[in-house]
Image (cartoon, rainbow, N blue to C red):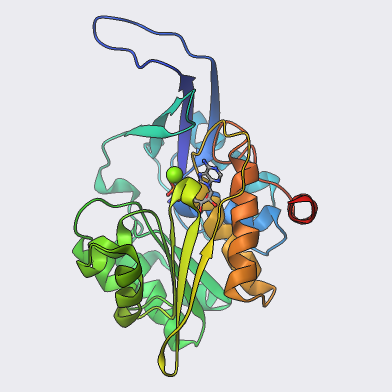
Length: 300
Ligand SMILES: Nc1ncnc2c1ncn2[C@@H]1O[C@H](COP(=O)(O)OP(=O)(O)O)[C@@H](O)[C@H]1O
Ligand SMILES: [Mg+2]
């Protein structure tokens, strides 16, 4: 999914009785895979993006940073309708936490499995999915697995059971990287460490769950069951906005895997990229380059 995010930074939310003032605003591309792929490209990976885009100025604005970082858009699917993957993001000026108000979606923006180019998709080493366009996502994941390639899934932040289409997808995923609550919602285990380990039985060989300022928790599966358990602390930073922290973590994580790094090094790199992102308003403005990230890690 790729969205246009309209970001508003404020201390108090408006009510129907009282207006409010915003301290900053921005228009940036967003969406879990969209932002992850901009991060991966900015960090040096060769990236293509598949999703849908509308026909108006909002669509141009949402695609701008894809062009800036040189993402291949040859398989982007154009819909002759106004852009409706638009999200208002209210960012709390004191904590940098955010709440979303998205446009109600119709079926128009879904990618169908028949719109996919199998050869294009399987020419990649990694496929990153976010569970939107779910029929197409499942098809693409199955093709990647048949081709012996790696499928990565963003299991979004969840507070309840994980929905059926997402469960079907997890079975075809090699690397599951989720937001808070996902592995508990997937497995029914309330305890995070038990849930992480239980999630390995659903298919993935690497499971990571990010927990905001509490960092990231990783478990891996080896020939004899659970192999590694790693906690990666978050880096202290001047937090302006956490929008997209998880999304860029995913993109950076794939870049770490492309470098052949182990899960410890990869999660540390991804955490650094996320921390740097959090210092700017919006999911994309703060994404660092590879060199900036390495310099940050050296100082940390
Ligand atoms: N307040 C913060 N300070 C420092 N790093 C953060 C902060 N919030 C998130 N991060 C970094 O970003 C990663 C992903 O953030 P998280 O909040 O779990 O994702 P999301 O809310 O986008 O699903 C964390 O593991 C951490 O490394
Ligand atoms: Mg967060």
